[in-house]
Every structure is written in C-alpha cells, then in structure tokens.
Image 1 (cartoon, rainbow, N blue to C red):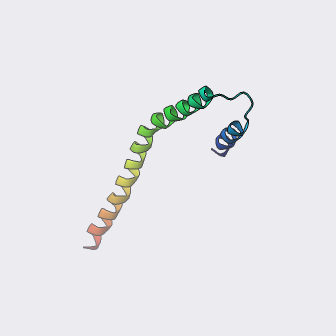
Image 2: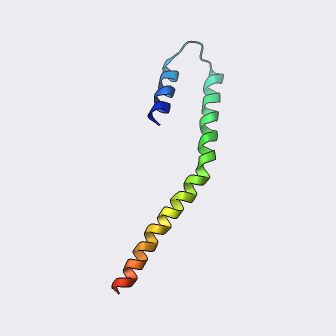
Image 3: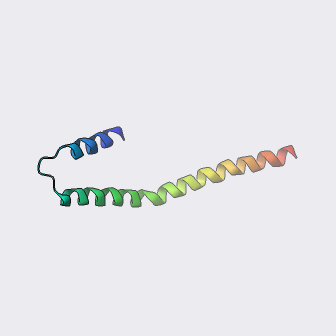
Length: 64
C-alpha cells in the first residue's frame, strides 16, 4: 500500500506534461477501484461485526 501511495505522491509532484485530463483520469481510476472493493469490504466487515456481537451475546447468555 505504501508503494502505491508513494507512486501517486511522486506522480503528483512531477509537473512535466501533466494536464487536467490526466488528473481526471487518475481520479476516475481511483473511484472505480473504491467502488469495486466497496461491496466486498462491506460484506467482510459485516461478518466480523456479526461474529463479535454473536460472541458477546453467547457470553452474556452463559453468565446469566
């Protein structure tokens, strides 16, 4: 992940030949990646949260 961030920082600092079109394309690619992984992240996060609260509920039921 750090490599990707470093690449984009270096890319943004390099002002030779950059145009607004390049920036728009870069933002479009970033948005597509975010929307692509959004569903899987939500699914996995939901599983983790359900697992945690399920364990809490089980523990609460045991101590009653």
